[in-house]
Length: 172
Image (cartoon, rainbow, N blue to C red):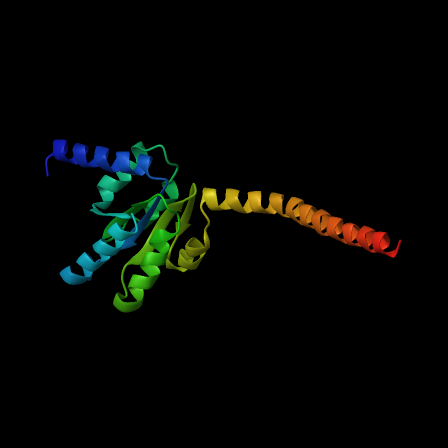
């Protein structure tokens, strides 16, 4: 491969790394063509972009990117494919479900929510990771909960007072 071709690939990878908030490094070696096509279809349905890369080119793209992912360099051995996504935990769920039947893909590392996760044992942790929007929604719900409770108690209290006043009015 010519150096000009390598530069184009590195630049494309760097753009993808910079444009996606999350990416997973996996090993899909050993999957036959049919299983690989099935995996690609699942990725497409879940808005996950699957790219098979050379480790040296990926490392250079990571070095040139805006992401601080030096810890991932240790995972750049053997066959590597990258799953790019905007949803933090969808690739983790996809990997878990697909690997039940096929033993692959295997998670090597992940860059999620500006943190690095290394190894297959981090898969369950990644499945549980909430996105920034989900965390904001949880905080808003927690903040709204006391107000909602107070309003409902005031409303029910008003009904009770109204009932007491009606009863007193009827006695007169």
